[in-house]
Each structure stands twice: as structure tokens, then as C-alpha cells.
Length: 188
Image: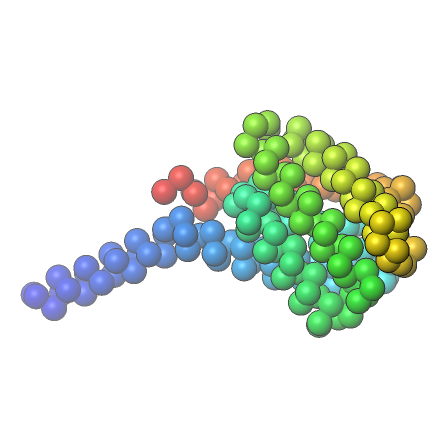
């Protein structure tokens, strides 16, 4: 009888630990990092190497993380996705890696800040617009202030090329984040 009580207490403690917000945060960040690595690879295999610039698959995991878990999680997803994607697949190229890292961290931080004040759709629109303006500033400083090469990166070209990806983000990201957030019940 005493062993059963001890076993039940251990099971309850384990259940409490596994359902805690901290565990959900860590597990969610890890899962979204894995998605941030896997989704671009799937897109490249199905639609070609240049499809990443069109469909922006790496952005999706970062934006979902920002809406569900906030800026720190989304920044971790951005960094781990880009670095491990590069190490595993060579994409993005080493030259573009720092620029893409900066771009995704800008989106991670902006979306998490905007999402505290506005609904997810307004927050995402504001992030997409202001994020590109800030990213243009980063490129301007890199080129003109630091004399660094940008390897053909252009904000205007990335917007035009990435319009399908931006549409996917606007349609899917808030919807997916809402469903996942409800499903994992972060209000524990």
C-alpha cells in the first residue's frame, strides 16, 4: 500500500513536470527549431534550391515561435535553424548566413513585441513591414558603413521574390499559432 502511494506521488510529480509551462516552452522551442531546419529542406527538395527565397520556409517556424513563446524562443529558433541548416545542408550559404540570422532575429523580436499590444494578424503585418525596413538599414550599414559585401542581397528583390512566402505567412502563421497555443494550453 505504501509503495502504491509512493508510486502515485512519483507519477503525479512526473505529470506535473511534463505539463509545466517551462517544459512546454523548451519542448516547443526545440520542435520549432527542428521544423525551421526541416521545412526549408523539404521546400528545396520539392521546388528547387531557389524556392527558399520564394516561399520563405525558415521564417515560418520563427514567426510561430514568436507568437506562441515570445522573442527569446523565436530568436533561439532563428539561430539554431540557420546554423544547423547550414551545417547539415550548406544552406543558406556561409556568406548569407549572418545576414539571414540578423533578418530572422529582427522578425522574432518585432513580432513578439507587437503581439503584446495587437492581435497576431496586425502584429505580423507590422513585423513584415518594419522588419524589412530595419533589414534594409542593416544592409545599408553593412555596405556603406562597414564596407562589407552583401553578396547580391537586396531587400526590394527579396520582397518581390518572397511575395508567395509573405502570403503564406499572413494566411497560415497566426492560424497555426492559435491552434498550437490552444492545444498546448500555456496558461497552466
